[in-house]
Length: 169
Image 1 (tube, rainbow, N blue to C red):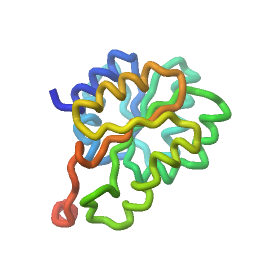
Image 2 (cartoon, rainbow, N blue to C red):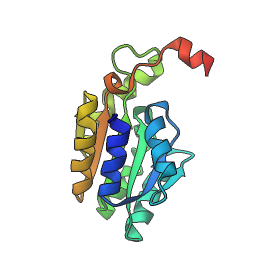
Image 3 (tube, rainbow, N blue to C red):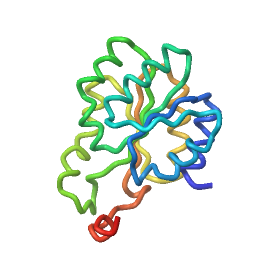
Image 4 (cartoon, helix red, strand yellow):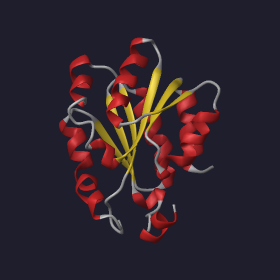
């Protein structure tokens, strides 16, 4: 079983009903699985900041949620993560990493290098999957907690985009 299928299974087993996401090639298969799951509502976001409000609303409505984003999106949510700290609601984010070794886009590197430290500074528990076999267990563990947690998925797992791939899309 590939990691997106294993993560989707973990989301279902944990009772996740709301999945917020900004479209991302690294999450493509997981997003498709969540969209096809009649027990889940997959909500496309305009910006990652909207995901924090979505997660807060889901929690207030008694629903479990998860946010899917790329590491560059973490830079967009720093201020609104204060809401998670102050309101103390559980938040699980699954973050595909950019800016790691082999990255073709230099604009992805600074946030890619800072993602874990930024999230930890905002009070989140951060774990990192460097191998596909680690992703689902780390997500399952994050979903069991009642705190804010992020699982970072290394570019080694999702693959490194090339400039040529970007031009053809």
